[in-house]
Image (tube, rainbow, N blue to C red; front, side, top):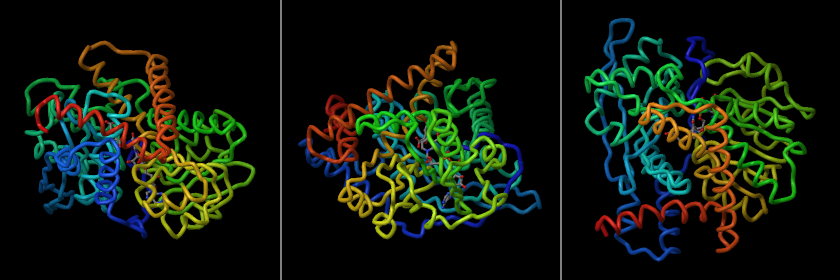
Length: 430
Ligand SMILES: NC(=O)C1=CN([C@@H]2O[C@H](COP(=O)(O)OP(=O)(O)OC[C@H]3O[C@@H](n4cnc5c(N)ncnc54)[C@H](O)[C@@H]3O)[C@@H](O)[C@H]2O)C=CC1
Ligand SMILES: O=C(O)CCC(=O)C(=O)O
């Protein structure tokens, strides 16, 4: 989510991950392993390996030059046994149906780990908002809501921001949905601006959660944040806020990157200055000197690597060369299974995405609760509740990993998937 919808942008070409593996089949294998360890029957796996509902839509948009362009969009609702589904909407040229399905399953895991009364969902539109005017983005956002309006709603499925979507896009979607329903519906979507019922703390929530996860995981290894050199990949909503919060906590941010590459400085970067220079799509490197390619960036010396961009960035080719001793996954799906194994064999601690980045959906849940109550919390209340839930969840997962002698990722899958299996039993589905 970019913090500022202002239409200033520095365009760099499409960012297809060079080492793409199928994130859906990888996720299904991990779900299988978690359910096998927990002893659930095959029908539970069959119900949880795919979203219960997927909608594919074609959205006609009148472009500024008068042409009509047709965009493909998706909404995947993984499982609604626990409650309504919840998850962001991504605008990106590389969006695929399998990716959206995998992202919806990961959302369920986050909700399960944090005991949120939701199942997972995710949406995506194949488009490049960096090449679209604000008017074109607005018409696309409104067209998407019209196309999926039957299957979403405050008690059905609640969207939110993700890559290349932001509070402005949430506002247009909220407005469109409220017009269709002829009823003001702030609980339909989260990540709204404060003036439209957004929650204090939501914008930086994912990053704050990542920073807390890092602090807690490092603490278990006897390390203090102030002593750590950190490399952050991605400088959008999550990456730039992670860099800022960790910088404020006293860590040394030695490198940051975006879709154009990365910069590295052994003595630490001036993070507030870099944040001032970034555009609304999380691009800063076009304004900087000595920019290195992403592959070179990821293997620079550091103690902690925080991937905060896209999937499959840590793969079998670069995993043997990483210099970090911890990886805190702020992005969804940044590590391929092959790389995961290599990092494990190298003794590198990986705090998995479904744990580390769940601060976003947690504060989205707080936003929905506040919308439903019509009563709003202070930023301190939001952050204190988030902190308590992050601390508890991080130790729960790391303790579970130790108890069962499994990786933190498998422990997170086991803890996260169980509520869905149990809820389906109570409902009589299995
Ligand atoms: N926004 C949120 O609340 C949450 C986001 N996430 C995940 O965090 C990640 C980042 O999301 P946001 O910061 O919201 O997106 P964003 O759209 O604000 O920023 C994306 C950033 O990634 C960079 N990027 C794109 N391709 C890249 C590449 N190949 N190499 C390096 N950098 C690249 C962009 O230049 C930009 O800096 C995604 O995986 C997203 O799903 C996870 C949980 C919640
Ligand atoms: O805030 C939300 O509801 C969802 C955030 C999201 O899309 C994610 O965690 O990947």
